[in-house]
Image (cartoon, rainbow, N blue to C red; front, side, top):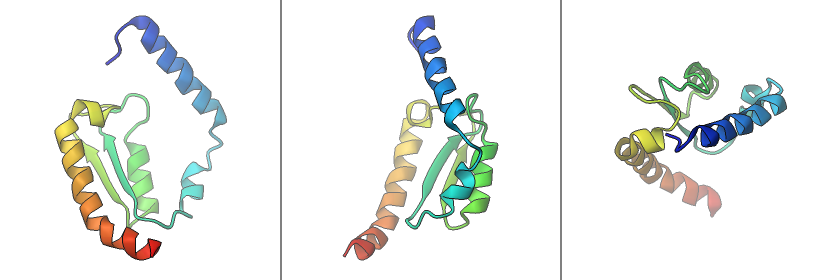
Length: 103
């Protein structure tokens, strides 16, 4: 997914910056979200394990959470057709809610 070892090293360095800023409270803090939630995760994500998606789904029972088989960290790149179909379906179903809340 990366054009050179140098690109991959840069990606890992950026990821390490995020790890240092994570306090372990992100899931608890996310329970305050008051809008429709859609999440898509790759079952074989090598950077952030799919168990995080399972924990998020448990914390947000109204959320639409998908974990895709045969997929890693980049579902939008690895399975673009499925990603786009699922997102478009969710957006179409969520539109009345978003418009009603915005009015």
